[in-house]
Length: 273
Image (cartoon, rainbow, N blue to C red):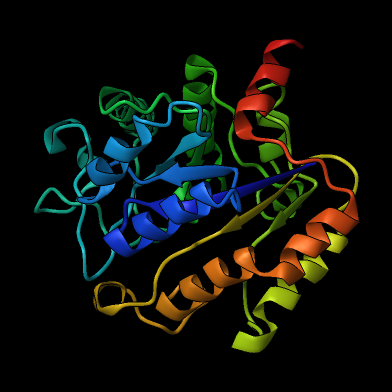
C-alpha cells in the first residue's frame, strides 16, 4: 500500500499552484499544509471547494531565514517555541529548551486553524520530522495531540534506531510506515530524477509506505525563498512535479502492483481496531 503525499503546501504560491495541478491531474493523493504560512489561506480557499481531498496539517515549529512565521497561538502562550520577536526560530538546536505542553497546545491550534479555514485534517505530520526525532517528551506531546484529534501521523519504522521510543510510544495511534521514500543526497541528475523514484517504487515492501515529495514550480518567487543547494530547493521541487507526471513513474506505479491509499483510509482502519 502506498500513500503519495505532497508536502509544504502554503509555503509559496508556486508550491500551491503545483500541488493543485497535481491533485487535478490525480498524480498525488494526499497533501500536507503549513497552516502558519502566508499562502496557506489561498490554498485553503481552493480546498474548500474540494472537501473530499486528503489534506493534513504539516505542523510548523521553525521558520526559514528568508520567511519568518508566527505560531497560531499568541507568542506569550508558547514562549519556549518562539524567538524574542515572537517568530518561530530557524532551528531547534539540541540545547534549546522546549516545553512539551506548549508543543501540544500549538499542534491543536494549527489543526483548529485549518478547520476554521475549511480544511478538516485527515492526518498530521511534522516539518522536518521535528516532533518525532526531537526527544521522547516532545514526541509524547505529539502523540497525545494525535490521539485527541484522532489523526494518524507519519512514523517510519526506520526512525527507531535514531529515536528508540517512537514505535513503543505510538502504539495504536498510527500505522508505522515500512518505507518512507523521499529524495535525498546524493541526488540524481535532472534527467535521472524520475528513474530514481521509479526504482524506489519498485522496491516497496508489503505493508504501508509513503512517498512524500515537494512539488513546486521553479520560478522567481520560489528562488527568493529557498536556496537551491538541496533536493527540496526550487529546481528539486520542479523535478518532483515533473517526475510525478512522467510516464516512467506512472508505469512503475502500474507495474509494481501497489495499492493506492490515503491517510483518510488509514484513520478509518485505526478507528476499526
